[in-house]
Image (cartoon, rainbow, N blue to C red; front, side):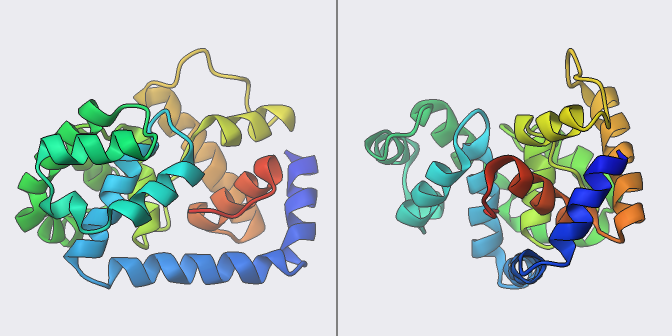
Length: 207
């Protein structure tokens, strides 16, 4: 862990820290910008499961309000045209997710911590622990880890964790707690730490 701490501390002293601060601020802005934009982020996170995040961003921007207005058949056709890998299944998930539009704001305001994430995983088809955490981070919540293979690889490389054989809920929470402790050492939230770790593995700052 010490080697990773040293690397991140150097990045904290670089211009990257300013880029990350702006990105975190943009996430908070999305969370305050209304139900339509929050739902768009929910759809983006549904799309990212087993799919490239950069390509999902392009698709999100292209579909726009179609996440709310297109029929399931037309949405699936649009996703397919845009090169999405699972157009029919994800279109079905997104159309079903619309049923939560009226209640989502209240849920986000009322529930906290694991209870909030568990509600998303249990009620929004297509969201697992990673995708629910990704959604919450992208609308301004700061205390959830997004454990995709990029992040896992960085942690394994620096001997922070052993490579997990599976990533069930129990293991996910265990690794999240390791990251939370790492964040405290660096004075970073999990949201900020994720962006540093993602940068270390990919050389990019996305969302």
